[in-house]
Length: 443
Image (cartoon, rainbow, N blue to C red; front, side, top):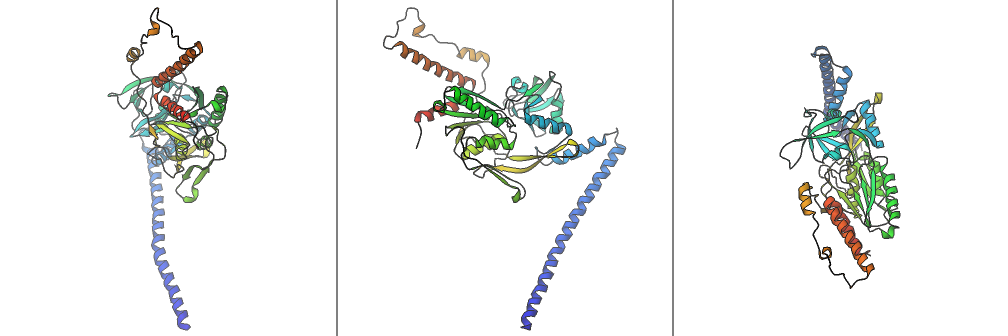
């Protein structure tokens, strides 16, 4: 018995020695790491003092510290940044849906400002800015080497003033200038209309107005068509939608899903993750949905497209989306400033991350570039037919009602053909819904 106790005590002692031997180096490493951090902070203080005392011109200490903070955040990823009190207020106004400027969502790539998407009906959209454009100069001044916030600040100005931006665009051999008149941007989050028996919901952004606008617009269009029985499907147009609020993306997805996961977010620590699930109730009552996306569809748009695609609730049509699969949290700081920090990645219901990959459409449909006006005029000339000839015979085999019905059907077909010229992707989406409607409900 004494031998057993001794052996046990020996084992305990050995365990203590081993633990001490392992913990010792770990503690030493942590101490060295902490010491190194303090040394670097001392270095920062030394540099700050030398700049303040010896720089060729007097500097504003507050601006210097803000620049250092912003540099620390922007070194992490393109979406983390420091928001000065003015920038933080601008962001709050943006989410409410009205602000001044050009009407473009931008990011930074290779040192240049890249357009994520122009916003419908804004000066940038009217002037011809396209998703994927690179802005290299603002009023003749290069933006290379500037932070994104600095470049955006260059583009701000009084409403009614002119700005000239230099653009590099894929497919164009040389950079070219675009003149834009700044204006107050009033965002209409959702525009609804009908095309034949199809309800089209054009979602331009995800702000506080998006879900209420979507629900009200959809109900209005259904009423104008005479009820859900007369609706053959819905086109949810998310093209050139740069995203916005995560909760609005979840609510829009939930509007068309009865159950199941919509999106999950995962941070550095497993316990920081969240899952968001749909609640019962489908706004569209099971009617087929086509979601339109393109390279300007980002963030919240990709959450909606990915959720409806994974649940096989919608057919996704268009081109690959932007690929912003990260979540930013805006954290208030002292003095009304704020910090925008990337805190998580989001994942579609099937568990796929779209970060840098984007959502791939089920059916890839490119949007043809518009032809020059002279080509359109040549192709648009009306051909003469038998009915146009003077003295041609009437058709005696059909009644007036039958002839009227044929003419109405032809008018619808011609309207569809005209839509293909104006917006080929949208016309394609509507054709899909027509085909599904022709097949009838499936059991």
